[in-house]
Image (cartoon, rainbow, N blue to C red; front, side, top):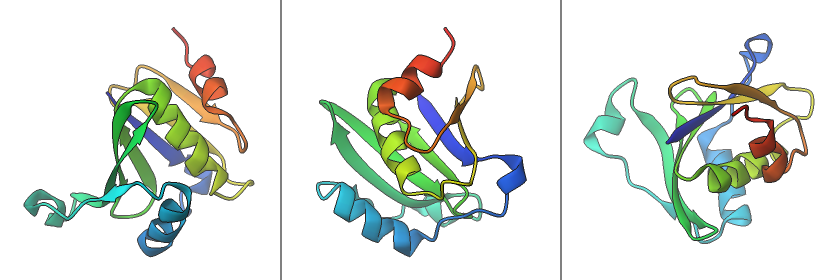
Length: 125
């Protein structure tokens, strides 16, 4: 399943620069495999910076949209929550963030400092 991590509407001007994310990612996840753009990524609504990493025995594909406003994480929920928890720790404390799945069956707030377990436990179900 694909999960989305994004700033609240009140913080819609927040964005992350892809170059900055690459540097932070490689410090936090040195084993991350940065992906070359595919032909579809070149499209205006295509994916931005993409990478693959392994978390808890699960392969996770993640990408930032081209506008730098939403992180997409594809894979196991527990592993995705670990990546979201790490990414949230790299974002400003005063910006509110949420996470949902790609069919919008839930949307939860992700507080600064939230652990992966706290994120998973906050999902109704």
